[in-house]
Image 1 (cartoon, helix red, strand yellow):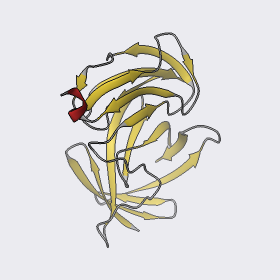
Image 2: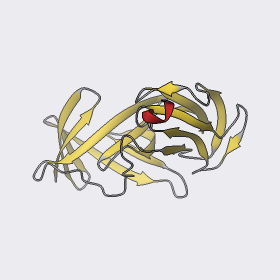
Image 3: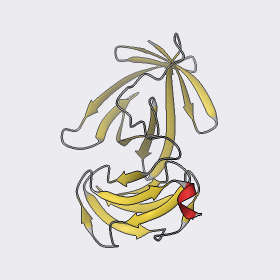
Image 4: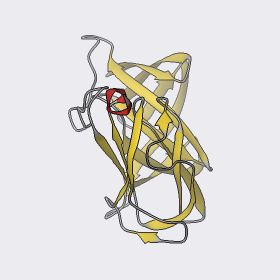
Length: 172
């Protein structure tokens, strides 16, 4: 299956055929296995092992990936149809209210916002440490922080509400 994958400002052609992945014309052996009960996946790529945190993004085909303490936004489209390849991602509209939740159990180590604060799409909201990796959770859309549900030092479970954003219109 062929995909067009956008990572930040870069777009790559990716072809997946079993455990063989062709990225930008370079073939690599790859295997992706979920770690049950967590949003983590073990990626074996060309002999190297990576633990990847996966969080559904804003809309189908969009994902936030955490690798080695870095967080990247990814969009994968089926090259044949030009449509996203997943239906599992949330479909909240860009102006609706949305609660950002913990992608995995962890400890809240930093809160970058307060109730009533306006934020832009992609702004850092909360940092949760899990498995010795800090995961910065970002605003899925511009809005106003309606509620901060956690405190620094608080342990959270997967799916626990962290921050609720209201539409930007809620500020005025």
